[in-house]
Length: 538
Image (cartoon, rainbow, N blue to C red; front, side):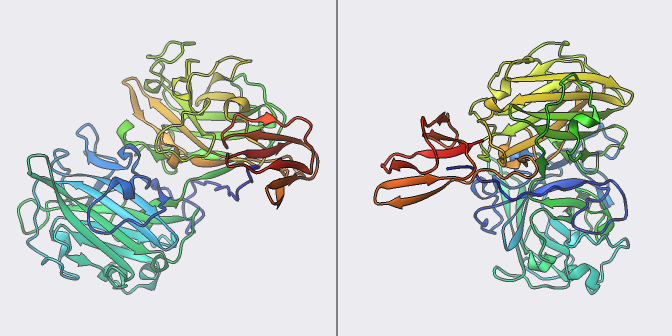
């Protein structure tokens, strides 16, 4: 059958301060919540079958851990209200997972902590001094209203009507007062549980926390919305007051400082245009009609194992445009980089360690399969080009590189960094039709001379298709994709379509596709037990 165009949207990003709506990210940090087909069981046990497709799950890219080389001593996060940075991963570190469905937001936090204390809030108690014990705090600004003043009253409707603070400790004491006491329980407005974890020898190494918060309690945000969000972990090593608090971003109870949580991946619509010249020089007229993708240190989805996520806007970032024609998809990237370094992969080389140099990477999930890893069909996968013209396509199953090959790239230096243009033939990506939606992602590698220090991405994590954004290949203005319909009489199917075009068939939705000789609208085919797929191309 013809692959119907899916409904998509374009998020126009802005780095301007002062916005308080769900369409615009704030100047803090950004991460994604991804849809979960099955609600996880809230029992304090983070099972990969339940959380493996959540935001943060792929390669644990949403991690907060100590790093003595950084000024604040914490990679992927920062200090909260109290204490000094942890001294090791075992002292305190944590991973965050976030998903959602039509009813709830789901948050899981895997905490590494070698000393667990629970002396202040009694087990399973409500609204006790939870901040003095080991525990996890989730803060949500569900309407992204960005209240600038710290508010812990639990009575301000600007806070509690769409969120607030939700807490669970290592002994399952919970706190909801600062969320306006919405109601805690397995069938109530929110619910959370923890369970201790141990290594192979049976030694306790930390705990896991799971939260369910109803979207209605958060003001009913929808896929594509930004909401304010952060996670803090309290660490008490010796009883009494806690020793430290580490937070993903911002400060507790201060909405304006929370991070941006995007429900679902980003989306982009690429217009169908005349092919640009792939020479590494981005000319506006060649990408006319294409909206800009603008990524800076506030809007980027960072891969924390690749480096930290706190930088000045002049350090790195990029603007990108995507267009297509009948032959190929074209991606242009204007990269900001205050120090361009290419000391690892030689200029013009293939399949070197390009990620250790200043470079850009684009990723395609061409059959939109949302696999946990990278695709293995045709040449979907990763295409890389460095600022000095080295390329890598090993993770795209080694297509042919060159001006007339399966793909091509070119680069040029600029006053503020460099530019790269890509051409990827549609024949290398299952020949998507006009109107098709495919998985897509962009990442930048930033090397200042000692290997990659950061990898800011557009929508997800490299080599993890389920985290990618969605790229729609628009049909030319004033046209619509052909619509293929069928009727049935017994075992005979009649395929019909309007507007001409070539009927193609395949044994799998991913192809290979072949034209059906002599077929026109009204084509008849006998139904059999074998699967068959049809589409119309114009």
